[in-house]
Length: 315
Image 1 (cartoon, one colour):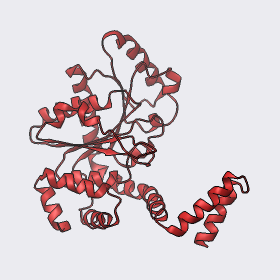
Image 2 (cartoon, rainbow, N blue to C red; image 1 turned 90 degrees about the horizontal axis):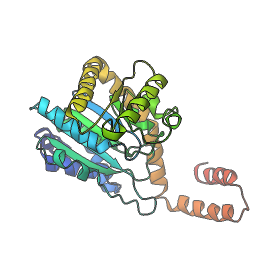
Image 3 (tube, helix red, strand yellow; image 1 turned 90 degrees about the vertical axis):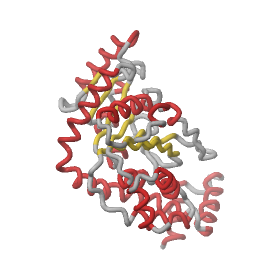
Image 4 (cartoon, rainbow, N blue to C red; image 1 turned 30 degrees about the vertical axis):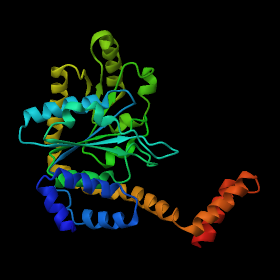
């Protein structure tokens, strides 16, 4: 298919075309990369018609459950709208494989005709996202998704790259995720637009209330801290209303923000592009292996080895 045919299929809501386009975007094969580049560069620059929402937090906080509950609530409120979900799973450092199980934790949303869920392996990409997350979100927008939710890996305080992808960051916490001081460390909370303390029900309600109060004193006053139970519709609706309120507030500046995000993400993309192509260079790989042996035998310090590889390959 030509890029124009891809775009036409996406705009017609063709789910198979969206799935295939996302697969090409994720591929590391050179022929697929060329096709992916030809496609994404013809996509219209974001008109910011959709709202991108990042859902982040520690493993086990209930991110997938929140996305399902919030997504279903949104779709019931707006019967003409569509949702896209990019669910990023951690990859094995050895095999690079992923279980990609997040979709199984959204059974009802995954069957909804106006929702499209895409599990994606993070690979070796750090920051809680994937290398081509930005392009994947563009494809969701081209397919007419009004809301796009991005579920990060869930590795803790280092998932800062999500702020370069979305319009709104929701940080999910749970009262049993460790002591309050650990949870309130600077990092992910600094980029939060909304903080939700999940599992605020049953035996953990009181602990959630105390934890939410402590968090509220640790973050800026303009960052709401909400109690949440994905099992209670009123709680999910309250979070939905907070998101909708911010959607309206951000609409006038969303296009400008998207353009600045593209620029901020460029150094990350450049670094990964360079490393990918260096790994395909036989000369670079040979140099790397040669100096790795010298580092292992302590005949050279790693810093000096890096300097030597750089000089021999680039200078």
